[in-house]
Length: 301
Image (cartoon, rainbow, N blue to C red):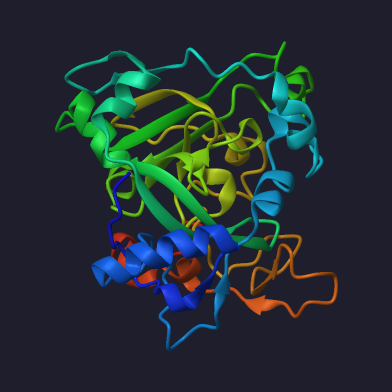
């Protein structure tokens, strides 16, 4: 697993679980670099960022395919079969086909990335992902010059994903990115966290992570990726277009119609922990603001 410095997070800005910290501190001492990863917060501009624990990350999340409660995914996802796993890549690519997960991994460089994670519901975490850049996977399939968007689809298997037997959303779950967003170096396909395989409830075996967007954009348990020249439909935008836009960039200046997005509550901080201010683009403005130059971010939310 490669260690690569891709952002501004320093080892002194992060407090890890003890074993994780000890191993990574040794690597950092040998290389003169901090752990691989990126948050948009500069050390001088942000308080110390503490990684959420394994228990917090795996025990509190949204994955409506397993239920709408925060603990439902951890309770119900154990029955999901994740091997064998195939990802279909089609549309405007040179080499369309069904790609076995193991074959994909054999061709990718797995890196450690520490990212802020901000839910549209105004709670947040700091997560140590393992994964590879989405751009590398798309290069494997070959991007045609006419491609402008990337569409994603989650597994549809209601016999193992009981939430899909409800009508809470239109299944299967689908998401999309503009091609330049997909090719940004911060955009990864995560295969693990804390150096372990990603658990079922967090999107095993392969999920998207786009750290400057609200968490629902980071689609889980991906089985299909389609390159297209038209903007693809997305699940939450279809469910509530006034509340969930196609872009869904973290923006403290644009409130959800039913609550403010100006602040967030860190998971694990306790009921009386002080809320913290939400950062534009979740703290990644230096890396991604240029993607939206000239756009009206209140209209294109």
